[in-house]
Amino acid sequence: MTHKNFNFNQILAVAFMVWICLVCSFPGAQASGLSNQESDGYLQWMHSLEVVMENRDKTGLDEGNLLYPFDIPGWKGDESRPYRHLAISKAINELEREWLLRGENRTQSALVALANARNYVNLSEYDSATVWFEKAAALDTDKNFFREICRERLAAAAANRDSLDMLTGITNSIGSSVITGHEAEFILALRWLLIQQDSETLDLVLQKIQSDDTNLPDRLRYWVAYALAWRKDTTGSLKHLKILINSGGLSRDLTENQRSWVLFAIPDFLFLDGDQVSSRSLYEVLANSRAPRLSTWGRYQVANLDFLGGRYLRASEGFKRVCEAKRLGSWQDHACEMTKVANEIERIKSEGEPYGAGSFYNP
Image 1: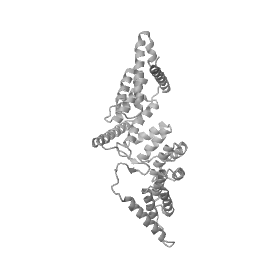
Image 2 (image 1 turned 180 degrees about the vertical axis):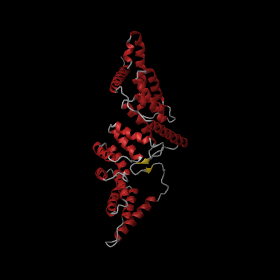
Image 3 (image 1 turned 90 degrees about the vertical axis):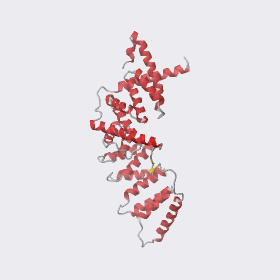
Image 4 (image 1 turned 135 degrees about the vertical axis):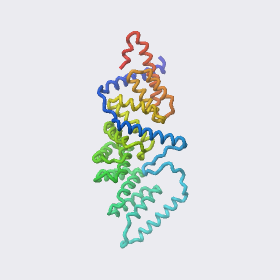
Protein backbone atom coordinates (compact mmCIF):
# COMPACT_ATOMS: atom_id res chain seq x y z
CA MET A 1 0.00 0.00 0.00
CA THR A 2 1.43 3.37 -1.00
CA HIS A 3 1.57 6.33 1.35
CA LYS A 4 -0.99 8.16 -0.83
CA ASN A 5 -3.49 5.28 -0.60
CA PHE A 6 -2.93 5.01 3.12
CA ASN A 7 -3.82 8.68 3.61
CA PHE A 8 -6.91 8.32 1.44
CA ASN A 9 -8.08 5.30 3.42
CA GLN A 10 -7.60 7.28 6.60
CA ILE A 11 -9.77 10.07 5.21
CA LEU A 12 -12.39 7.54 4.15
CA ALA A 13 -12.49 5.95 7.60
CA VAL A 14 -12.73 9.27 9.41
CA ALA A 15 -15.47 10.53 7.10
CA PHE A 16 -17.45 7.32 7.58
CA MET A 17 -17.25 7.59 11.36
CA VAL A 18 -18.25 11.27 11.24
CA TRP A 19 -21.25 10.28 9.10
CA ILE A 20 -22.32 7.65 11.63
CA CYS A 21 -21.98 10.08 14.56
CA LEU A 22 -23.95 12.80 12.81
CA VAL A 23 -26.76 10.52 11.73
CA CYS A 24 -27.10 9.05 15.21
CA SER A 25 -26.98 12.43 16.93
CA PHE A 26 -30.05 13.97 15.26
CA PRO A 27 -33.50 13.00 16.52
CA GLY A 28 -36.36 12.12 14.22
CA ALA A 29 -38.52 14.98 15.49
CA GLN A 30 -38.21 18.14 13.40
CA ALA A 31 -37.82 21.65 14.77
CA SER A 32 -40.27 24.39 13.82
CA GLY A 33 -38.07 26.10 11.21
CA LEU A 34 -39.07 29.58 10.03
CA SER A 35 -42.50 31.16 9.92
CA ASN A 36 -43.83 32.58 6.64
CA GLN A 37 -42.91 36.09 7.78
CA GLU A 38 -39.41 34.98 8.74
CA SER A 39 -38.98 33.17 5.41
CA ASP A 40 -39.98 36.34 3.55
CA GLY A 41 -37.53 38.33 5.67
CA TYR A 42 -34.78 35.85 4.87
CA LEU A 43 -35.40 36.25 1.12
CA GLN A 44 -35.50 40.05 1.43
CA TRP A 45 -32.25 39.99 3.39
CA MET A 46 -30.56 37.86 0.73
CA HIS A 47 -31.90 39.91 -2.19
CA SER A 48 -30.73 43.16 -0.61
CA LEU A 49 -27.26 41.74 -0.02
CA GLU A 50 -27.06 40.44 -3.60
CA VAL A 51 -27.87 43.91 -4.98
CA VAL A 52 -25.24 45.56 -2.78
CA MET A 53 -22.54 43.05 -3.70
CA GLU A 54 -23.34 43.17 -7.43
CA ASN A 55 -23.31 46.97 -7.55
CA ARG A 56 -20.02 47.12 -5.67
CA ASP A 57 -18.45 44.53 -7.99
CA LYS A 58 -19.47 46.63 -11.01
CA THR A 59 -17.66 49.65 -9.62
CA GLY A 60 -14.55 47.63 -8.74
CA LEU A 61 -14.54 48.98 -5.19
CA ASP A 62 -13.54 47.05 -2.10
CA GLU A 63 -16.13 46.32 0.54
CA GLY A 64 -16.62 49.26 2.87
CA ASN A 65 -15.98 48.53 6.53
CA LEU A 66 -15.94 50.50 9.75
CA LEU A 67 -12.54 50.20 11.40
CA TYR A 68 -12.44 48.82 14.93
CA PRO A 69 -12.65 50.24 17.57
CA PHE A 70 -13.56 53.81 16.54
CA ASP A 71 -15.99 52.92 13.72
CA ILE A 72 -14.05 55.14 11.33
CA PRO A 73 -14.86 54.43 7.65
CA GLY A 74 -12.08 52.35 6.17
CA TRP A 75 -12.66 53.40 2.57
CA LYS A 76 -11.73 57.10 2.76
CA GLY A 77 -8.39 56.54 1.09
CA ASP A 78 -5.35 58.76 1.55
CA GLU A 79 -5.62 61.71 3.90
CA SER A 80 -6.37 64.77 1.73
CA ARG A 81 -5.31 67.25 4.41
CA PRO A 82 -1.55 66.83 4.89
CA TYR A 83 -1.38 69.41 7.71
CA ARG A 84 -4.28 67.99 9.70
CA HIS A 85 -2.09 66.63 12.50
CA LEU A 86 -0.26 69.94 12.79
CA ALA A 87 -3.59 71.71 13.19
CA ILE A 88 -4.66 69.22 15.86
CA SER A 89 -1.38 69.67 17.73
CA LYS A 90 -1.82 73.43 17.66
CA ALA A 91 -5.38 73.10 18.95
CA ILE A 92 -4.19 70.91 21.81
CA ASN A 93 -1.57 73.47 22.84
CA GLU A 94 -4.11 76.28 22.78
CA LEU A 95 -6.74 74.31 24.70
CA GLU A 96 -4.29 73.20 27.38
CA ARG A 97 -2.93 76.75 27.75
CA GLU A 98 -6.47 78.07 28.05
CA TRP A 99 -7.18 75.41 30.64
CA LEU A 100 -4.27 76.54 32.82
CA LEU A 101 -5.20 80.23 32.45
CA ARG A 102 -8.72 79.73 33.71
CA GLY A 103 -7.72 79.71 37.37
CA GLU A 104 -9.84 78.75 40.33
CA ASN A 105 -12.47 81.45 39.66
CA ARG A 106 -13.18 80.32 36.10
CA THR A 107 -15.51 77.42 35.27
CA GLN A 108 -13.78 74.42 33.74
CA SER A 109 -15.65 72.98 30.75
CA ALA A 110 -16.46 69.32 30.16
CA LEU A 111 -16.79 70.11 26.46
CA VAL A 112 -13.27 71.53 26.30
CA ALA A 113 -11.90 68.45 28.08
CA LEU A 114 -13.81 66.16 25.68
CA ALA A 115 -12.50 68.10 22.69
CA ASN A 116 -8.95 67.73 23.96
CA ALA A 117 -9.45 63.99 24.52
CA ARG A 118 -10.66 63.62 20.94
CA ASN A 119 -7.68 65.56 19.65
CA TYR A 120 -5.32 63.19 21.43
CA VAL A 121 -7.22 60.22 19.96
CA ASN A 122 -6.70 61.69 16.49
CA LEU A 123 -2.97 61.82 17.25
CA SER A 124 -3.06 58.20 18.53
CA GLU A 125 -1.94 59.43 21.98
CA TYR A 126 -4.36 57.18 23.84
CA ASP A 127 -2.81 57.53 27.31
CA SER A 128 -3.21 61.31 27.20
CA ALA A 129 -6.69 60.91 25.71
CA THR A 130 -7.70 58.74 28.67
CA VAL A 131 -6.58 61.44 31.13
CA TRP A 132 -8.76 64.00 29.38
CA PHE A 133 -11.72 61.63 29.14
CA GLU A 134 -11.48 61.25 32.92
CA LYS A 135 -11.46 65.05 33.33
CA ALA A 136 -14.45 65.34 31.02
CA ALA A 137 -16.37 62.69 32.97
CA ALA A 138 -15.63 64.41 36.30
CA LEU A 139 -16.78 67.79 34.98
CA ASP A 140 -19.87 66.50 33.20
CA THR A 141 -22.05 66.64 36.32
CA ASP A 142 -25.23 67.18 34.27
CA LYS A 143 -24.45 64.11 32.12
CA ASN A 144 -24.72 66.11 28.89
CA PHE A 145 -21.89 64.15 27.27
CA PHE A 146 -22.18 60.95 29.28
CA ARG A 147 -22.83 58.62 26.33
CA GLU A 148 -20.06 60.07 24.20
CA ILE A 149 -17.50 60.00 27.00
CA CYS A 150 -18.26 56.39 28.00
CA ARG A 151 -18.10 54.98 24.48
CA GLU A 152 -15.10 56.99 23.28
CA ARG A 153 -13.11 56.34 26.43
CA LEU A 154 -13.77 52.60 26.02
CA ALA A 155 -12.64 52.77 22.40
CA ALA A 156 -9.45 54.58 23.40
CA ALA A 157 -8.72 51.86 25.97
CA ALA A 158 -9.28 49.19 23.29
CA ALA A 159 -6.96 50.99 20.86
CA ASN A 160 -4.37 51.23 23.65
CA ARG A 161 -4.82 47.51 24.47
CA ASP A 162 -5.35 48.48 28.09
CA SER A 163 -7.09 45.40 29.51
CA LEU A 164 -7.56 46.90 32.96
CA ASP A 165 -9.16 50.08 31.65
CA MET A 166 -11.36 48.03 29.30
CA LEU A 167 -12.63 45.80 32.10
CA THR A 168 -13.26 48.86 34.26
CA GLY A 169 -15.32 50.42 31.48
CA ILE A 170 -17.17 47.18 30.76
CA THR A 171 -17.97 46.77 34.46
CA ASN A 172 -19.40 50.29 34.51
CA SER A 173 -21.51 49.44 31.46
CA ILE A 174 -22.85 46.30 33.13
CA GLY A 175 -23.70 48.37 36.20
CA SER A 176 -25.68 50.95 34.22
CA SER A 177 -29.42 50.94 34.90
CA VAL A 178 -30.50 50.79 31.24
CA ILE A 179 -29.09 49.72 27.88
CA THR A 180 -30.78 52.47 25.87
CA GLY A 181 -28.20 55.10 25.03
CA HIS A 182 -25.32 52.74 25.81
CA GLU A 183 -25.72 50.40 22.84
CA ALA A 184 -22.39 51.40 21.28
CA GLU A 185 -20.60 50.59 24.54
CA PHE A 186 -22.09 47.12 24.66
CA ILE A 187 -21.18 46.43 21.03
CA LEU A 188 -17.60 47.42 21.74
CA ALA A 189 -17.57 45.35 24.94
CA LEU A 190 -18.81 42.23 23.13
CA ARG A 191 -16.26 42.62 20.35
CA TRP A 192 -13.39 43.12 22.80
CA LEU A 193 -14.38 40.13 24.91
CA LEU A 194 -14.73 37.92 21.84
CA ILE A 195 -11.23 38.92 20.74
CA GLN A 196 -9.89 38.22 24.24
CA GLN A 197 -11.97 35.02 24.49
CA ASP A 198 -13.10 36.09 27.96
CA SER A 199 -16.15 33.85 28.27
CA GLU A 200 -16.92 34.68 31.92
CA THR A 201 -17.14 38.45 31.42
CA LEU A 202 -18.90 37.90 28.09
CA ASP A 203 -21.63 35.93 29.86
CA LEU A 204 -22.13 38.80 32.32
CA VAL A 205 -22.51 41.29 29.47
CA LEU A 206 -24.97 38.98 27.68
CA GLN A 207 -27.01 38.57 30.88
CA LYS A 208 -27.21 42.34 31.22
CA ILE A 209 -28.31 42.81 27.62
CA GLN A 210 -30.84 39.98 27.69
CA SER A 211 -32.43 41.39 30.84
CA ASP A 212 -33.70 44.23 28.64
CA ASP A 213 -33.52 43.00 25.06
CA THR A 214 -36.94 44.03 23.77
CA ASN A 215 -35.73 47.09 21.85
CA LEU A 216 -32.18 46.26 20.86
CA PRO A 217 -30.91 48.04 17.73
CA ASP A 218 -30.13 45.61 14.94
CA ARG A 219 -26.36 46.05 15.10
CA LEU A 220 -26.25 45.19 18.80
CA ARG A 221 -28.63 42.28 18.22
CA TYR A 222 -26.24 40.93 15.59
CA TRP A 223 -23.32 40.94 18.04
CA VAL A 224 -25.48 39.33 20.72
CA ALA A 225 -26.38 36.55 18.27
CA TYR A 226 -22.73 36.15 17.27
CA ALA A 227 -21.57 36.03 20.89
CA LEU A 228 -24.24 33.44 21.79
CA ALA A 229 -23.13 31.33 18.84
CA TRP A 230 -19.53 31.53 20.10
CA ARG A 231 -20.80 30.34 23.48
CA LYS A 232 -22.45 27.43 21.59
CA ASP A 233 -25.96 28.61 22.49
CA THR A 234 -27.31 28.13 18.97
CA THR A 235 -30.94 28.17 20.14
CA GLY A 236 -30.52 31.57 21.80
CA SER A 237 -28.58 32.89 18.81
CA LEU A 238 -31.25 31.66 16.39
CA LYS A 239 -33.91 33.53 18.37
CA HIS A 240 -32.11 36.83 17.79
CA LEU A 241 -31.35 36.01 14.15
CA LYS A 242 -35.05 35.43 13.44
CA ILE A 243 -35.85 38.85 14.89
CA LEU A 244 -33.06 40.34 12.81
CA ILE A 245 -34.31 39.05 9.44
CA ASN A 246 -37.82 40.29 10.26
CA SER A 247 -36.42 43.83 10.25
CA GLY A 248 -36.31 43.79 6.44
CA GLY A 249 -33.62 43.83 3.81
CA LEU A 250 -31.72 46.97 4.76
CA SER A 251 -28.08 46.84 5.81
CA ARG A 252 -28.75 47.75 9.46
CA ASP A 253 -25.20 49.14 9.69
CA LEU A 254 -23.75 45.66 9.13
CA THR A 255 -20.99 44.79 6.68
CA GLU A 256 -21.43 42.38 3.79
CA ASN A 257 -19.57 39.67 5.68
CA GLN A 258 -21.77 40.15 8.74
CA ARG A 259 -24.96 40.06 6.69
CA SER A 260 -23.69 36.92 4.95
CA TRP A 261 -23.05 35.29 8.33
CA VAL A 262 -26.70 35.84 9.28
CA LEU A 263 -27.80 34.02 6.12
CA PHE A 264 -25.36 31.16 6.79
CA ALA A 265 -26.01 30.85 10.52
CA ILE A 266 -29.80 30.46 10.34
CA PRO A 267 -29.83 27.22 8.30
CA ASP A 268 -26.72 25.98 10.14
CA PHE A 269 -28.44 26.36 13.51
CA LEU A 270 -31.69 24.85 12.22
CA PHE A 271 -29.64 21.84 11.11
CA LEU A 272 -27.93 21.57 14.49
CA ASP A 273 -31.37 21.69 16.13
CA GLY A 274 -32.39 18.65 14.06
CA ASP A 275 -34.45 20.38 11.36
CA GLN A 276 -32.81 19.05 8.20
CA VAL A 277 -35.88 19.81 6.07
CA SER A 278 -35.94 23.55 6.83
CA SER A 279 -32.17 23.87 6.74
CA ARG A 280 -31.96 22.15 3.36
CA SER A 281 -34.61 24.42 1.85
CA LEU A 282 -32.62 27.49 2.95
CA TYR A 283 -29.33 26.02 1.72
CA GLU A 284 -30.96 25.47 -1.67
CA VAL A 285 -32.07 29.11 -1.67
CA LEU A 286 -28.47 30.12 -1.01
CA ALA A 287 -27.18 27.72 -3.67
CA ASN A 288 -29.28 29.54 -6.29
CA SER A 289 -28.08 32.99 -5.20
CA ARG A 290 -26.47 35.34 -7.71
CA ALA A 291 -23.72 36.13 -5.19
CA PRO A 292 -20.83 33.60 -5.29
CA ARG A 293 -20.16 34.00 -1.58
CA LEU A 294 -23.69 32.82 -0.82
CA SER A 295 -24.16 30.23 -3.56
CA THR A 296 -20.89 28.40 -2.90
CA TRP A 297 -21.69 27.94 0.79
CA GLY A 298 -25.22 26.79 -0.06
CA ARG A 299 -23.92 24.17 -2.51
CA TYR A 300 -21.36 23.00 0.02
CA GLN A 301 -23.98 22.42 2.70
CA VAL A 302 -26.43 20.77 0.28
CA ALA A 303 -23.62 18.38 -0.66
CA ASN A 304 -23.03 17.63 3.02
CA LEU A 305 -26.73 16.85 3.49
CA ASP A 306 -26.69 14.62 0.40
CA PHE A 307 -23.72 12.79 1.87
CA LEU A 308 -25.51 12.30 5.19
CA GLY A 309 -28.58 11.08 3.29
CA GLY A 310 -26.59 8.41 1.45
CA ARG A 311 -26.80 10.19 -1.93
CA TYR A 312 -23.08 9.87 -2.52
CA LEU A 313 -23.02 10.49 -6.27
CA ARG A 314 -24.96 13.75 -5.90
CA ALA A 315 -22.78 14.67 -2.94
CA SER A 316 -19.58 14.12 -4.92
CA GLU A 317 -20.86 16.31 -7.75
CA GLY A 318 -21.77 19.06 -5.29
CA PHE A 319 -18.44 18.86 -3.50
CA LYS A 320 -16.61 19.00 -6.83
CA ARG A 321 -18.38 22.22 -7.85
CA VAL A 322 -17.49 23.81 -4.53
CA CYS A 323 -13.88 22.62 -4.80
CA GLU A 324 -13.53 24.16 -8.27
CA ALA A 325 -15.30 27.43 -7.41
CA LYS A 326 -13.54 30.71 -6.67
CA ARG A 327 -11.48 30.44 -3.49
CA LEU A 328 -13.48 31.79 -0.53
CA GLY A 329 -12.27 29.82 2.48
CA SER A 330 -10.31 26.85 3.80
CA TRP A 331 -13.54 24.85 4.04
CA GLN A 332 -13.25 24.35 0.28
CA ASP A 333 -10.25 22.10 0.97
CA HIS A 334 -12.65 19.85 2.85
CA ALA A 335 -14.97 19.85 -0.17
CA CYS A 336 -12.09 18.70 -2.37
CA GLU A 337 -11.32 15.78 -0.05
CA MET A 338 -15.01 14.91 0.36
CA THR A 339 -15.30 14.66 -3.44
CA LYS A 340 -12.88 11.71 -3.30
CA VAL A 341 -14.55 10.18 -0.24
CA ALA A 342 -18.06 10.36 -1.71
CA ASN A 343 -16.87 8.88 -5.01
CA GLU A 344 -15.13 6.04 -3.20
CA ILE A 345 -18.16 5.19 -1.06
CA GLU A 346 -20.40 5.30 -4.15
CA ARG A 347 -18.03 2.88 -5.90
CA ILE A 348 -17.98 0.49 -2.92
CA LYS A 349 -21.75 0.71 -2.61
CA SER A 350 -22.36 -0.01 -6.32
CA GLU A 351 -19.88 -2.88 -6.41
CA GLY A 352 -21.41 -4.38 -3.28
CA GLU A 353 -25.01 -4.28 -4.52
CA PRO A 354 -24.95 -7.72 -6.23
CA TYR A 355 -23.81 -9.27 -2.96
CA GLY A 356 -26.16 -7.38 -0.68
CA ALA A 357 -23.36 -5.32 0.83
CA GLY A 358 -24.65 -2.05 -0.59
CA SER A 359 -27.22 -1.77 2.20
CA PHE A 360 -24.41 -1.04 4.66
CA TYR A 361 -23.86 2.28 2.92
CA ASN A 362 -27.48 3.47 3.19
CA PRO A 363 -28.42 5.50 6.30
